Amino acid sequence: MRRCRPAHAPLPSGCPVARSSARLSIIIMAAGPPQPGAEGPMAGSAQGERPPGALVERGLTTSGLGLVNLPDGHRAADPLDLVELAHQVQKADEFVRANASNRLTAIAEQIRHLQAQARKVLEEARRDADLHHAACSLVKKPGNIYFLYQRESGQRYFSILSPKEWGASCPHDFLGAYKLQHDLSWTPYENVEKREAEISMVEKLLSQQASLPPCTEPNFQGLSQ
Image (cartoon, rainbow, N blue to C red):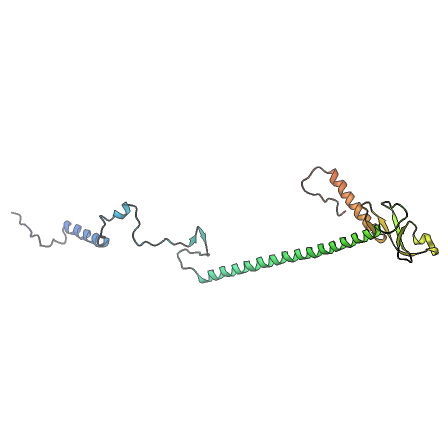
């Protein structure tokens, strides 16, 4: 006849039921006490809600771009990396300022050069206007050289006779010789050869441009020859 075990009596240590009960107790203790208002351990996940009090995820990059160079993503950031980054930013600012200063210096030099050219153009225009108002008893034709004289009264006039042709009988003071260009500008006699060389170079360039096929960009071939 089998004897019944009392309900409060402990189970033998080698019993299978005792081992199962011990494992169940360990699992329950690891899970912790149930949260108030939760119907089960997966109640919050089933509804797609985040656990209360969760922090924003943080990483080593911002928008996929690393701010500092970290060979090991699991170690703490080296303060020297931030110092190096600040030095690079400061160095970049210095280079940008230096480049801007160099460009402005070049522009200032160009402005001074253009101002000098503008003064030269104005002086030549004033000289040409004065020469055109000089007295002349003949029709002036482009390409010819005319000699400028001044009388005792202060009147200036053009003549086709040079001081050499006048000889010792030159009646008035000789002021200079000028060549009348086809654009009705005047070139001093000492600059005639230089001016003719420039005109010849421009004409050569224009003839080469006309003989070449159409091009969207200017062609300066032969300019230095």
